[in-house]
Image (cartoon, rainbow, N blue to C red; front, side):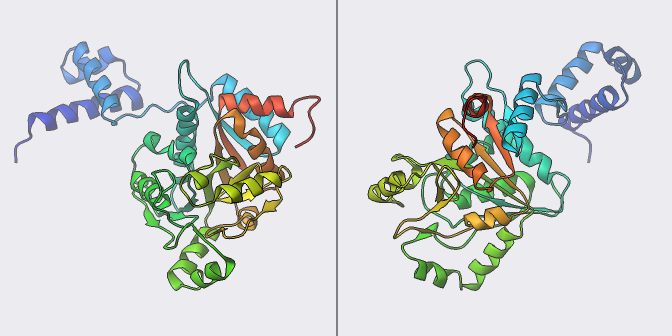
Length: 321
């Protein structure tokens, strides 16, 4: 079969990219070697970047992000990754971009299993994941499935993350919660549910987000938790949740009747090898501090505005978290 013009164009892009980025030749030198004009080489390099043949990865962090990460790690005792919010940018995009780069760094070497959580914050990283083929990567749902809006639909998040990495995926085949401990215990006796939960517990990394305890919490908005139940949690000092498990400022678990999450619990997170948790928005600072106080997370992924708010909340003269 004769090569098509598109084949020739792509071959030129690849050759130019290799000679420029790997061999260190200048555009003039490449033009001379390939017998084309310098402008042709320039266009080929630009097109190679647009089509994903070349990926530019900045290995040195932005100086301000590095400062925030360093100080937060010293103060909180957990690692921190900060996405800088650009002029006019939605902080959620900065956090999502930082989370995508962090997850890519975790899975790219291969031979890794990741238990994925849920939430609108976590779903912000999906558009920033760069599709790549990985080796022996498993993505597992860390909490039961729901039919809620995207971001809360855990199965959709698991599938999208898995698709980005060409990974094996496992959705926890159970509801996100049950109305009682007895039903939860019965559901976890199911072989498929038990096996998937065990995969999540054995995962190398749990990757999730930190929710805020408030009347507009997505669990309430989607009808999974009643307003009265949330009011009770708030009256008892709830500040946030991880995988629908609520806690107070000291990280102590808080439970209410008729709502038992089906998935990894707070004790599972405390026992996990590594827990990476996203948070976006200064209003989530109390929830972040509660998650840290409970020893439920080992690494935070934040936007720079939230990071600055955390520094202000934990700075000199502030009470210890």
